Length: 141
Image (cartoon, rainbow, N blue to C red; front, side, top):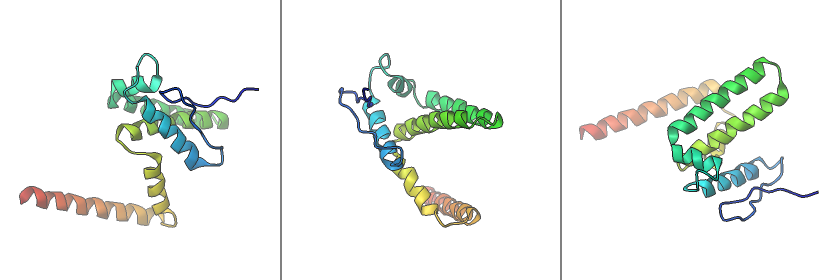
C-alpha cells in the first residue's frame, strides 16, 4: 500500500496532517496553493485558476456553492461533504489570491466564539460604519 501526499511545485511532498488536525490540513493545503501561484497553467489546475484571475475563481465558488445546495436538497450527506470540500478548496484559492490564509478565517471564527449571532452582526455593522466614517473624514481632509 503506497501513501500519496500532495506535491509542491518543486516536487517536494507536502505534509497534510490528520483528519482531526483541521488547522494543519488547511495550512498544508494553503502551502500547496501558494506553490501553484505563478505555476504552469497547463500543468496545474490551481495555476490555471490563478492565471485566469479572480473572476474565474469567483465563478468556481459560485458553481460549488450551488452544488452544495443541490446536494443538501437531495438529502445526500456524502455528496454534501464532497461538494463542501470543493467549495472550501476554491474558497481557499480565493483567500490565497488575496494574500490571506485559513488562519485569517479561523482567527475571525475564534473571535466570534461565544458571541450571539445577533451581537456579532451588530458589532460588525458598527465597525463597518466607523470605517466608512473614517474614510469619509480622510477623503475630506
